[in-house]
Image 1 (cartoon, rainbow, N blue to C red):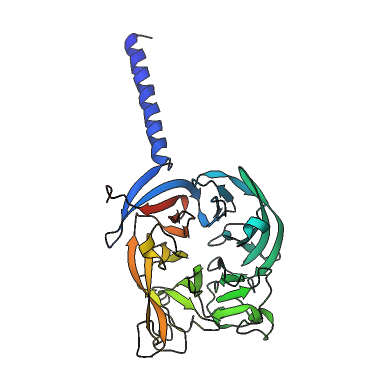
Image 2: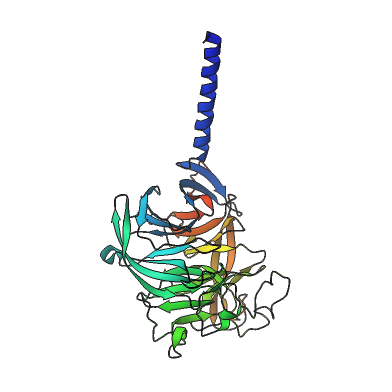
Length: 408
């Protein structure tokens, strides 16, 4: 080979290598940081820690490590730096179909001593594959340095009945201050189950951590699934959390317009599908809005256009001290993290303030933080930072912290 040809070949090889390296660097999320400025001018730093294929939920462990579920059935153990350490084995098998697959995971408050977690997912009917429903299992999680395994898996709850379609499972989980388990159960895109007390679809469920109904539930004594129902008239609730006063909050996707953030009150009916702040996708109107039918509990806040809410925390950390007590909601179609502030206003059941001497908690949107990605999950870390999971294959785990003075 001539010297000229050798140098040409060497140059071509170098260019290919550098291009491949540059491409790899662009795709590698490790240590990538970017500035994020809120709609009200708040400056944040967003650090990408890891990537996932369809991440759905995240939960921190007492030692600072974390768990992340992927909709296709993978459960990952992350280190304190947010990087994957390895997979958790013996996770219940799932089939990702539509909105179904592996869902939420939460850690028992006494995990340090009992190693208990709760995990939700979608199960197909054994006799009819067109039917499906969400279920919740209780399990023991044994951890290693690079993963772990689930054992003693016990079914404690399931949607009843399994129905057709592959949407609106909800199946978000939370532990209440009294130690009992809250489960959101979507109406599965079938509308009327949300008002049917013989079905637990379109409801918020309250049971013990073994799945048993509680005698102080509002409909206890009626038998069947009614014994487990805490509230009804819901659509698709992909976020649930308690505030510092023990109030339960859940958001739900409206139909065409009318996403809602609701303060969940024992025994209340939130009106779906009779009333809504939105409209049907076919253009037909509901019977009316909550204002037209005040017998139904009104939302504390609603959105038109929609934000497509997913994931919810009520922040109580020190890193963002000014935001203590605020809600943070992931937005799918809105591609934003939405911050919500709460206020006390005179009760009027309309979320806007009346003349009553009794006060109620209402909410207003305070700011949005956007970087062009669908946000599936929001969690508060033990360090007080806010962690979000981007949606879809290649979605990143993002750590949000206050921007340094030199960066703002």
